[in-house]
Length: 206
Image: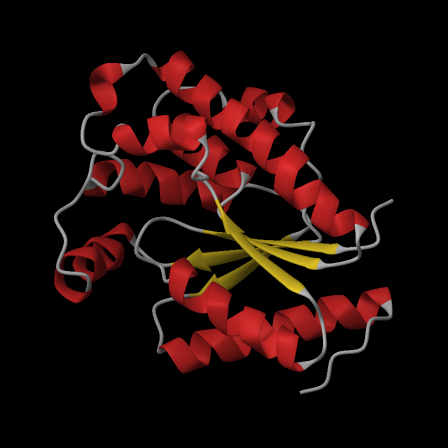
């Protein structure tokens, strides 16, 4: 068993993962922990190929797309996640294999088969699933970010993705209402982490 802690931030686009993850990292560092912040897709060769699909998902087949995510994750686990966990650090990842099961599942792949293909990856101690409706997500992307929607962010697609996220039965998932203020969401995240730490006998003050 790895001595470190792995926490994955999941959810459809626009739910605030990239905002909430650094806030939790700062909170945990202030508790004296070493925290590694990472994300998927990575900046590695497979991750760069995935990012190229954001504007044109039709470049590859759905199976080829899935294979890129698996290859990127294999490299991510081997080079970043496992070494950090073996050193007893806390790893916070912005997306993990739950996103692959949801997004590629919504594109027509079998989510159960995707989970099986990712069995090489360590199961998170906690998945913080930031939840909101697809309509709220699209509004945030367009109005708050001022961005146009990429090929992974179309509302009909996000509705399918959100439904799959909601269906996952894994006990490590903690669902967080993301349609609130940044401070309210972060407060819920910290409380969830404190409860998980308490169950593991790890100290974490308020």
